[in-house]
Length: 454
Ligand code: UD1
Image (cartoon, rainbow, N blue to C red; front, side):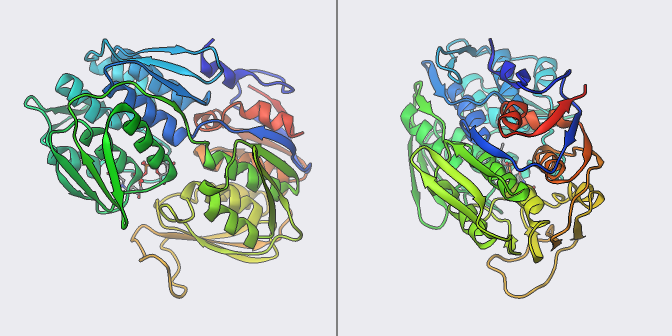
């Protein structure tokens, strides 16, 4: 059985393929959910396996559709991926890596942006790579200019075709000095995955330093890479001739953990998130405490609940160690129940408040300022793409007919429907399986009242 099968196990729920949910809200979510490895690490660690001369073993792989996409992309490139005995373990054997046809890559890439990270490893293994037009959540333009600029600095030739991008490096790749215009997570990973086997030293400035990136560095070091980091977002990579397989247990998914924490607050429930750890969640926990949330750090996870009435808060999303952009959507559902006016500044993406219109339809008082708000001193300089949402609460939410726009927004819709009194119909929930493993089973375990309609 492949991991993706985990997606379709819907204990307690009735019905078909899982695109539409009928939700009867108003019940607190109570119970335990367990989180596995981070989507934002696992998919990259799978790509890293391409760089090894021997097989790799990755543990705590979640059964989410983004993982299934990367698995099939690896397979079309000749990597043998097999499930280990322990649930959530992948064996990745890259000994027969080969070029894939454009059509095959295109057919398997789906909506994922991960194919861009195949560039460096494929250039090292095969001297060429093809990247189809990229998808990902519809939360802005999500360009790849930083990636392509970095690859050119390593010596790759980049050719744009109508169907995608072809890259070649017939005479190999050389270390480079790269300064990212913004600490992009994906571009930092691109540089890491390319520099580890490039000839000479790479100095990366203004790098992203998310916990998932630190875990990817740990994976690469296990493979034989030499990577060090200095204060102020500087990463140094000394290229090596050969890399080998790794054995690694992925860092937990702090985004999923934060999502369930916000769900506990929104529904006034109590959720224990098994596998969640404090160090990677410090910033989130600080905000949770300011909002009036309560948490108990235990050895095997974190318990989340309200500590009294919810209070308003002002947060700005930012790169790590700031408040992560993926955390704001579930939090906003909880903020609709806080007493007063909260402000969320979105500084990372230009279009990440689209999901709030469904919350407004359910009775929330949320005003989105598409060009942001100038409201006093800020920790980080404003970016042009900034938006702000002002949430005034508490407002009772009532059930509605709503359609999921993207991954985190979709999760928020479901949580809003569970917070609301009355019945909701939530369409397009399939997209949530990109990032939340066994989503329906977990909702059932927490006492959610819902049916799967189609
Ligand atoms: C990753 C995460 C996503 C998270 C985001 C920011 C994965 C699979 N996804 O996405 O969950 O929300 O980091 O923490 O790990 N940019 C450019 N040019 C580029 C690349 C990025 O302008 O070439 C801009 C983007 O438009 C955005 C910002 O940089 O405004 C951040 O993007 P980035 O950090 O690259 O996000 P992802 O790696 O795509």
